[in-house]
Length: 485
Image 1 (cartoon, helix red, strand yellow):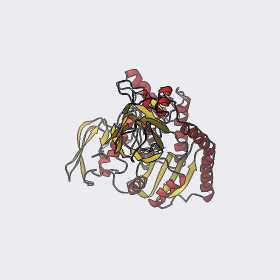
Image 2 (tube, rainbow, N blue to C red):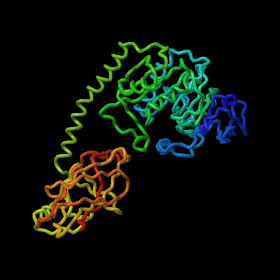
Image 3 (cartoon, one colour):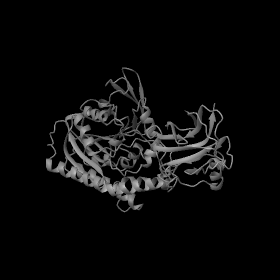
Image 4 (spheres, one colour):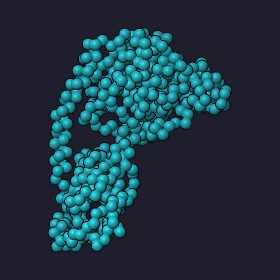
């Protein structure tokens, strides 16, 4: 961080603009080690390896996002040779000319790069002050810095693998830009200080897009420009990204929702493009000084998105056909089919509790767990188990859990039937085993009573949890069930 940079910073704690800097180590280019000090509230913010840490009192959402990305970092403690190759790879971003790797990964980087170059290529960046949100590996910040812009790169991660520490690879070849750890919803900068804000595959990580656009507007100059590239559009077949499985926020909005967020924040789009990969790229300004988007271009973007949605129809029909095929029959069949059929006909007694390891109680639709030391059964789209007819019972108690990566955002809701009577509905929205109780009607049956669970929403495929290519559609897990007086 250069000493002059202190003049555009606001204290994240009290909002004051009167800050000082205590230097511990300076290398002639920037302050490497030290602290930024607010003269009003006396709060100190560390500067380490040239990165100012202004991520003050991060919100739970930021903590979840940070944890998700940190869990995907490469193996720590790389050798010197690995570190050198990593920095060469970073400097080759985004086009990665001459680099080897999975074809899909290389093409993704190149596609992202082409989108940014297309949006930024027509601007004169010399002397402009630019803020990059969610800079990550910093390649876009380095690109604009080479064009003569004074760039500030912000992110919530500072490591050398996927965060602002990657900037060292570009600083080694003489490309300088400021690096700041902060929350993009609470930018620690003065009003109207930046000529442009760039975001590439970043805005969709915000759970509050309108608040984010409002904050961007605050730090932009009146004639400032917002450039966003590689933002995902909603498509019905969307696969769950790895970072979302880890807990990060991954918003995918329809085209009209993105434009509505911009309009409500006071931005006017001057350029809108829709990529074949269902990605959105746009320029916008507060005043429309760059010219409003032409109706023909907007119609072209809308038509492109419409084609993408139309092409989703065959995939949706195929997916629905697979869902019906999986959901109508109660698969798989019981492991002890003979015992289950005999018990169902009243020719065999079943245990008073349906524990996971006792075969005759468990009918079709249950998948046995692969965890030997803690037996339980996965519930399919429709599953059934048996309990003996109770002499006197007031409630059915089931010990259930869900292993969905994000149960609160994707709870499992299912209907419970006791015999042919609907007993109620349950929602499982938290990790860990819990007992769920349902009041039951008066039962007069003599034979074992079938209890059916039908999942209404909340399915997930185990591969979403990183369990290979397992294609089972699961709802909840059950360790046991019993009658209770």
